[in-house]
Length: 172
Figure 1: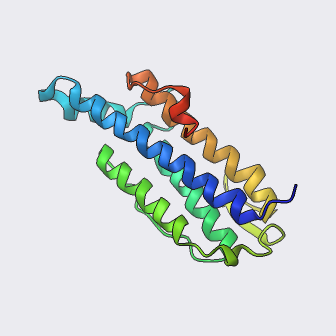
Figure 2: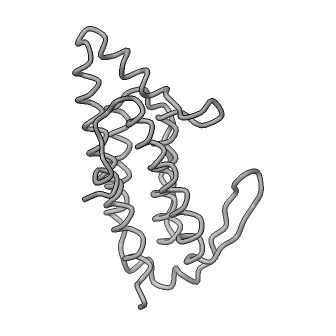
């Protein structure tokens, strides 16, 4: 089966970003329902939560998830990557970041992805420069990183008490 790289990337990333947005809606409800007077503190605690001391916190997990998605779309379409400040300090700001990323991906022209599977993608990661074909970049770098950080954000929400299930993560 031969799938155009646009179809293999943008709709998939958008689907899971929309699932993330719905999970963030549940996190908003959860924090608002926790002792009305201390809802802000509950929200701040969630945003700073992490699964282990040497892992990024919840906000950073969302930032990296969106960075992976927008970077992928831009690199494969041959356009400039939107720059976002990593300053989100509330669930509303994280939801806004997810919404901006979805809007960016949905604005991309599918025709710009023609030949992107063979296009060379170069980027710096871990202090070194790496080079991929577009297909290897999507399948071997973007998807594993995107799903890792998305799943880690899901797990932090679950650990914090947000009522989520597997179907929330699977975007169904």
